[in-house]
Length: 180
Image (tube, rainbow, N blue to C red; front, side):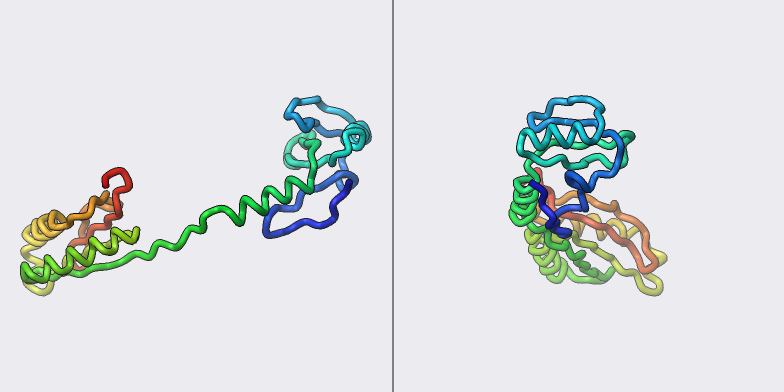
């Protein structure tokens, strides 16, 4: 029962039956029981008697580990598992900039914008920019960023705490999965 087709997108190349070119293998049967180290021709005979395939699953081991299994079913399950797995979409980092002199209404608007990004599952970088003489008041800028973050209604966790950036202060947050 040798299957010559191998779906490269599904599996790395596994050697099956006569493709295994080592003198002996450590054999595991179809029930998961370890049968021990045996010559390759005995392992192939055992697999053939059970009308199954001998598949090399641990090629890097000394001696290699080979499992007696139905290779066609194995490939089918792997394909189905790959198709059924939820696709992870890329989480795009969103950036929201707030100025040192930004008014209260604008801060409220930007906090609602961040809440929307967090609901969609995007991580958000919040930057408070300091210009010119504002850089001398950096401690006040940090306090302003801390009070701005408190305006958020969506629960969040910190990915990066408030830190200094070349243009002011920055913080990175993401949606908190534990809180609702």
